[in-house]
Image 1 (cartoon, rainbow, N blue to C red):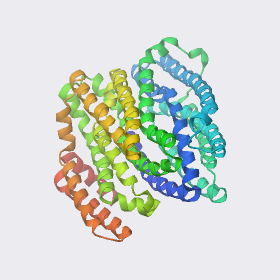
Image 2 (cartoon, rainbow, N blue to C red):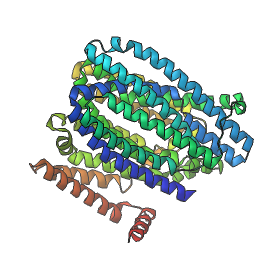
Image 3 (tube, rainbow, N blue to C red):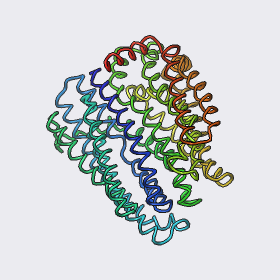
Image 4 (tube, helix red, strand yellow):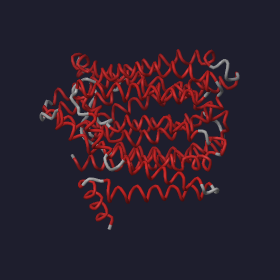
Length: 501
């Protein structure tokens, strides 16, 4: 299955690259076509609606883990029971999402009474309804993708993502040019989401013989899965709060036009986040195999080095490249009035880069059934993020919310969690950081600083961005190949170059 995982990772990064190009084009296109007010309205309501994702309870991850365990034990009846149990848990939770969304819908007018007009509130309610439908479709698709991951089918879901991305981009451009309304974004997402769900379910049924029978529902499986579900729902709250709380609070305390500016910074962050989180789920089966084979301590730590170095390289290049020429990029794509987003994005990305450097450790927690502890720690730091955001926004405005997110990330996801990894899981944390940063991080820092100053002395934004960006890539890749990469990485690059030839 190593080749399948490799194809899945390649497709994932192919999707990320396409998503970055399409996303940058779309975010700029939508912002210009809809205007700050209409685009800010959509971002504000979508940030509000995505809190419903907290009710998903991580059913995709639970489905993947349970199927992987059952396949190893070759218990076919147990496999069927697990699939049906988690699927009907998804059905129940989707009904809860609809019920909670109804309560949210009723209160939208009260929540945004000070920052939206009556017309904007009415439009926002319509957008909210459609976004809720999209979230429900995505919820079912997430669980279905968990089935595919459990069977180590890493390709299908990535292909569907690419098809969805291209279709969404084409439809939005055509429709927004005709009718520049925010609700069209939600309608396109919901329509494509439904089609993806149907196709994914057909693939699961046809290729893996999956059946969803109520008689196969097993309460014991549900209770056994409850701790991981609880941990994942807490983590979902953490992720959604960290991703949306700033836009949510800015929309309430400042203006929806300010949300549009912040959304540019958050989009850059989301591209970075996609790159660094891609390997995590795909390495779950490997981590599970290593741990069940008796890996622990330094041996387990050593087994995590290579995937972590991949994250450091790719994530570091995004942060370093954005530091070097990100301001010019934002001014060219979004306009000079959005250049503040450069600083906002950097403040958020830098601590998250440190956190995601050893993000593969999440799989260790899943296998050892210790995810709940991490989720509880992150819940506390998310509350800290919300409190700090409110306090700092009153004093410093939008940048206060950004600083609050960075500080809470450092305290919870970096400081506290790495102490936990070292003390309770026996991971050699400092040894791991030393090995994954060795040879890569110093080169990225030097290349980004040098490229920043070279680009700064070029007055033309386009020429500045191209020159600085090319210099950064050239210096980073050449120096990594000569000095930074280990023998495995050098041989991998050589094999890829031979394939291309």
